[in-house]
Length: 80
Image 1 (cartoon, rainbow, N blue to C red):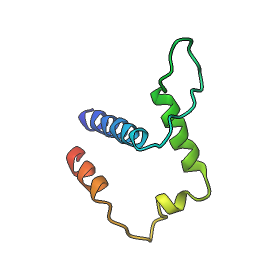
Image 2: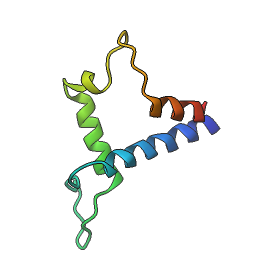
Image 3: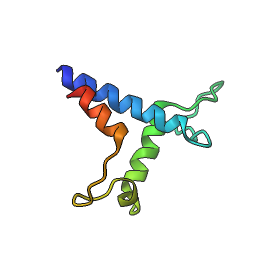
Image 4: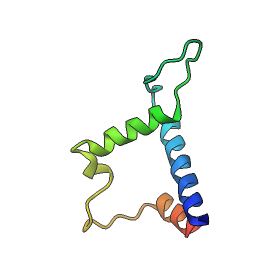
């Protein structure tokens, strides 16, 4: 149960890091009167769309192309 929680927190952190590095705020899917900020689900939807893109192999190469990403390696060591 602890590992599951840690992976969830790691996924949330990576999502917010992704959102922080975006040049423009994502468009709200469900607009709320009086709110101009985007939501976690808006960023998550953008990540899901990127994962379904045929150019996704450029970001996450298929197995067989070994790449070492230090950030991912550190995060995985933290939750293991």
